[in-house]
Image (cartoon, rainbow, N blue to C red):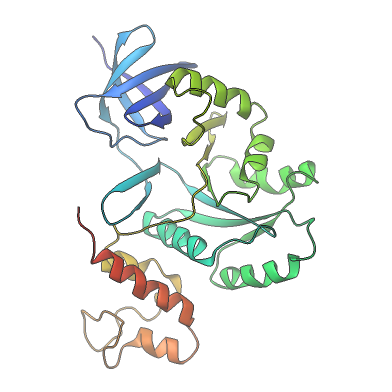
Length: 296
């Protein structure tokens, strides 16, 4: 039987949904492998008119994932940009935003911050001040209010999406679902179809899913989460994932400098001179520690 090629649009456990010629097919992997991600292009063979078995993952341009001490959690493959959705209320955590930015840098994915709910003015200026720090690092910040001004939100966001594969992440309560429903008018219908096809039932909504806006544009919605572990990143990957470190890398006294307490470390000098923030260097130190604790 000939191998076919499909796009993975949802995953639940080791069960996947592939989009093939405008329809959904239930797919599984051979054995216990579960290294397929939403956004992957896969080759598969049909086992029935609406089911198949995945034979291979086609080459990826990027892979975004998070990990803890014990295992990795694939978020999406072949994405070209990451939207981190935050809001004026409830407050967002700096740690998750910072870690998501490091993940994007390490995967070679452009990152944007989307500030939603700017109609809630009481905490707007304080939130803008927090985000100005990231804007200073070179990450674009876009202000929207998906529910109160949908037309204005589309005017800002739609051009950013065109021709891209974009994953949206954010903590619960940031209004990410409102944004997805605005960008993908049939999103709720699609979720029900995907849930039925994956046989996950009406109570399961915590799976990543991909929506095709047009032939060249896709949006991937991920479940809200509070933590973003990056245990998978090596020391070399970490130091290159902080753009403010770039000008100093390769100029330390020791070629294998860890940038923690070594003499004549130019990262530490940048920290002393105020060119690198104490919070960012503390995150680097913490991520380096976490990477050393990996057990898989």
